[in-house]
Image 1 (cartoon, rainbow, N blue to C red):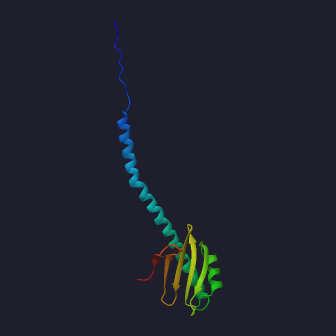
Image 2 (image 1 turned 30 degrees about the vertical axis):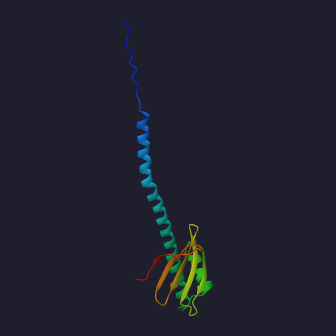
Image 3 (image 1 turned 135 degrees about the horizontal axis):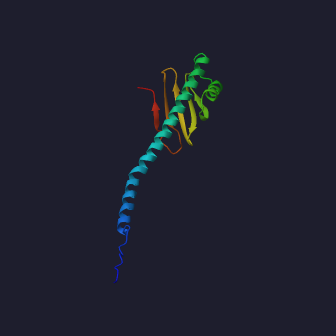
Length: 140
């Protein structure tokens, strides 16, 4: 008696594998851009937080010096009180009531402009090729 051999193959066809790979690639196309968007948002938030720390330190200096921003004292307070990268006072208003400070966060340059008289400040990206986009302002 001859026995019939069961020669049925088990596994997936090439078409089925290609369909699954295509679906995975399509889903990745939705997820990857969102993830990079979250990274950019986190970097911007980090830069804003560094700017807020700088503003607090600069205002501490302002209070110590009887309502005047003094370059050396502002830089000293920033160094002592913040973790900001490369902070530098770039300009002080002629009346000593305003100051511009540049700093770095995640290899991008930012500038904070503080106006003590009006109790406001703004933070902007500060690169040669950017439009100096404002990323935060405490003015209404």
